[in-house]
Image 1: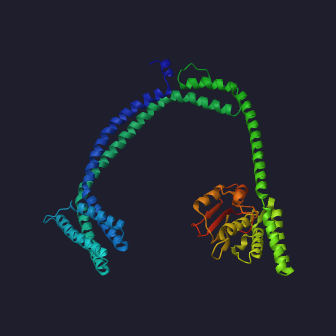
Image 2: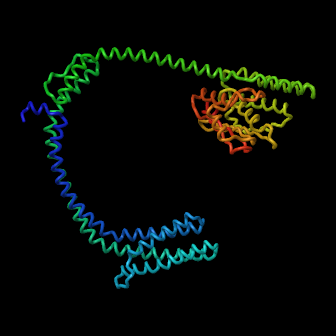
Image 3: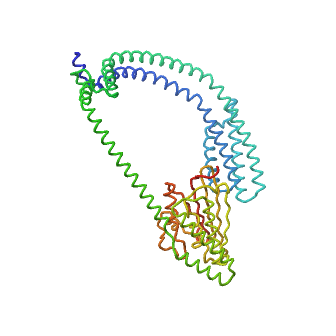
Length: 495
C-alpha cells in the first residue's frame, strides 16, 4: 500500500487494523489460558464442596432455631410458615449426609448428626404443637431441650467440617500451585503482548497524532483571539484532512460570528432583566391584593358587641374592649403591607381572642406555648390570627363539647415551627387537599370573619418566602380536631 493510499484511509479503519491484529493474538492466547485456568478452578471448587454443604447445613439449622423462637415468641402465621420452610430445607440438606455405620470418623459424625437432627426435629414439632395448645410450661421446656440439642448438632457439624477441611487442604494446595503457575504464565504473556502492541500502535498512531497536535496548538491561538493563523493546507481525505480544511474555513468567519453572538446575548440579557422586573412587579401586586382583603362585617358585629357590653357593664370594660378592637384593626391596617415580628403577631392573636371572648362570654378556651427567644423573628403580617380564626369558625364553634385551641411555637437553628391545634369538628382528607391546593372556596367564608382566609395565608407565605409546601394540615376525621403546622424559614431573632 503506497503512502498516498494510507493517508486517505479513515482514522477509525487505521486504528482497527492496528488494534485488530493485536487483539486477535491476545484472544488466542487468552482462550488457551482461560481453558486451563477454568479447568483448574472447577477442580478447586469441587474440593471444598463438602465444606460448603456443611456450612449451608449449619446456617439452615440456625434458621430453624431462630424461626422456632420467633413463632414461640409471637405465634404468628408468618413465623410458623417460615419455621416449616426452614425445617424442610434443613431436612433436604440432611439427605446429603451418610447414615451408614462405618469406622471412618467422618462417616460416623455424619450418622450422629442425622440421628440427633431427627430427634431435634421431633422436639421442635412438639414445641410448636404445645404453643398451639397454649401449654406454656411444656413448650418452654421443649424449647430449652431443642436449644441444647441445637448446640450439640452445631458442634458435630463444625467438627465434621474441620475434618473434611483438613482432608481437602492437601488437594487444594496442589491445585493452588498449578493455578499460580498459570497466573504467572498469563501475566508474562500479557506483558509481552502489551509491549508488542504498544510498539505497533506507537508507530501507526504517530502519523495521526502529529496533525492533531498542530491543530490543537492552532486552535489554542484562535481561542486567545488570534484569527490570523491557519493550518497548513492538505489534500488528505481522512478525518484529519477534512477537519483541517473545515477549521480554516471556520477561522475566516469566526470573528464575525463572535460579534453577532455578543449582540444577541446583550439583547437576551436585556429581555431577561425586563422579564424579571415584570415578575417582581406581579408578585408585589399579588401580595398587595392578597393583603388588602378584610371583611367589614367583622368590624360591625364586633362594635355591636361593644355597644351591648356598654349597656350591661360599666364604662371601664367597654373601654378595654374598644381599645383591643382599635389595636387589632390598627395592626391590620398598619401591617397590611409589611412583615411583622412574632411578638406583634401574637399580640394581634391575643386581641382577637379577647374580642371574641367578650362577644361569646368567655367560651373561647385559648392557650399558647411560645419560645420567647423567637419573639423578634420576622414573618408576614396577619398570618397567625386568620389561622386561629379558622379554628374558631370552622373548628370549635357550635360543637357540643368544650372547644379548645392551642398555639405552640418552637424553633430550630434555621426554622420556626408553628402549631395551631383545636379539638373541634375536624376535616376530611378531601377538604384538606382543597385548602392546600387553593380550591377551598374563599367566597363561602362566613360574614362574621376578618375575611383573611387560609387561601390568603398560604398564598402570602409562598410569595414571601418564595417556597412551596410551607403549610401542613392534619386531621383524623370528623369531630377529631384539626392541627395546622407552619414550617417557616427563620429570619431575625436570637439563635
